[in-house]
Image (cartoon, rainbow, N blue to C red; front, side, top):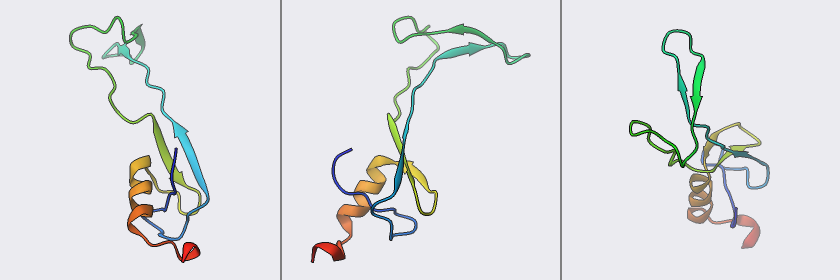
Length: 86
């Protein structure tokens, strides 16, 4: 979380954001009941279970509610000239 953000949707919010920490939990479910029958760690994943490779954080705009990857907000800020810094 370094550098400025700008919401790519509303294009006005540079200050109010919600940081959403994603904590993946690898599980195996019963296909009929939906009950969790096994939990995995990264050390004991079976051959058919791919480890989570997504982002650790998502960002929600505090003005319009858009939820995207952190990089999206950073990229929008870097491509837009900040009127407060001129």
